[in-house]
Image (cartoon, rainbow, N blue to C red; front, top):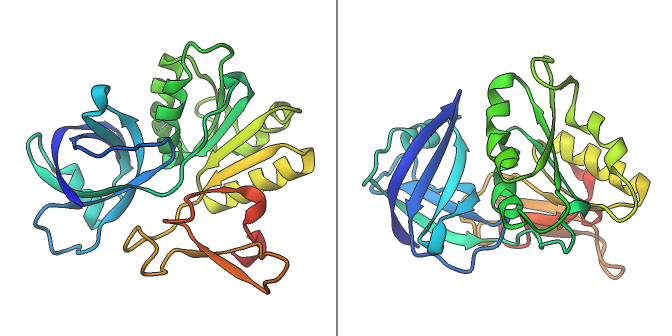
Length: 259
């Protein structure tokens, strides 16, 4: 746990903000997260988890992308440069890098795009381009994928209202991308993750998912983010902590029927 200083806190449209923090964390991996609380605040008392969106040059700090949904994130949105927050992390397991960027299919819904930018940026200029399949409710959310295009990611978009890209769900874009040799990384709403996992299973494509769960501690102590996972042969049932065992899991590890 340590203090971090807000460098900037930019409104990127709708309820979405991108915040840069000057912070001396280390050992970052794409897909990990941090637990953040406004310094000195007692309400809300608990920290909130945020995926690491980007790592600043020289690893002098990080960026987080967040959506204002309640009191805690509302307080974050009001912070100015120079304000302080308490940060715990980096936490959890991340996404492994792939040898061939062109083999990677990233699937995201809404704010679930946050864990993928640093990963995508790290593959820029290293051969074939990865693809991002992004599902949004409205065109306002599509603003979140502009930085991906800027670093060379091939982006395909679907919106529920048809205002940008094709109309429908992000899973409607999957079929043509699920070919032999591909790897799928997914983050977003539970229903989307279940559908992506099943589609990848049917086509025999490797799939890793980043689960989003409410967390209190971030280190596996409070047991508040437990999910049922596939048991080993000698066990009747098994539970894993999203914060410490995840948030990234191989999709076949998750007992999707338990949700």
